[in-house]
Every structure is written in structure tokens, then in C-alpha cells.
Length: 150
Image (tube, one colour):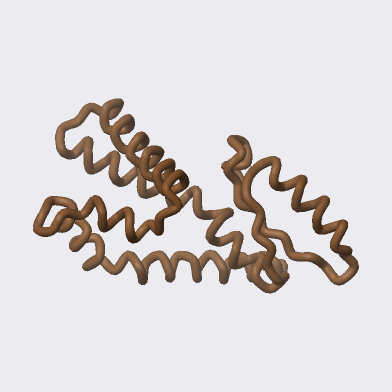
């Protein structure tokens, strides 16, 4: 989980049948040194990894594509990267600091009949909800194959 290198990982814990509450507390404290910890039943560990383990790659892909779009609009690569990367950093920092739901923050940026509303409509028409669900499902299938030795 590469975000662990900057203290922003998400680690899933599933207590085995032999683990005591004290064991779980020790492991939780250990992993909290590199980020957040989510306790889940064992059967959800693979699903958690498709979101928090693979998730950084999904975010990087979005950053890559938005950067390409900016370059396509005539920005120099360095400026495009700065704009896009700082936009992601700023948006996630505000999400963390505000405690607001992402949908609420998105709506606050989306002026009626404005540029953002038009762009969001295109993204929603592309069925990103379905695409992300399918991507997570594909990762989960592969995680289960790998766990089975495939």
C-alpha cells in the first residue's frame, strides 16, 4: 500500500479465530502509524484491497487522463501536471478538513448551467458509476483467483 510511505494508507484488519482483543489492538496501533485502519470480516479483506490497495492506481489514472486533457488544451506538460496534481491535493485536503460528503462538495463546485455542470454531465453519461463498480469487481475476481493459487 504505497500511501503508507506518506502516512496515508488504509489497512484492513481481520481478526483470526486465535486473535485476542489485545492482539488486535497491538496490530491496529502498529498499522495506524502508516494511516487509517478498517476492521472487516476475513471474507471482506480481498474486497477492501480492491479499493484501498488498488485505489491509488485508479487515482493516478484519473490524474494521468486529466493531465492529458490539459496538454490537449495547449498547456505545457509541467503546467498541466501542476494544475491537475494540485487540484487533486486541494480537493482531498478540503474533503478531509471539512468532514463533508464528497457529493456535497462536488455540488458546491457545480454551478447550475455552468461549465462544471456540463463536464459532470458528460462524465455521468459515460456511466462512471458502472465503470468503477466493474473495475472493482474485476480486481476482486483476480484477488480471489490469486488467493486460490491462480
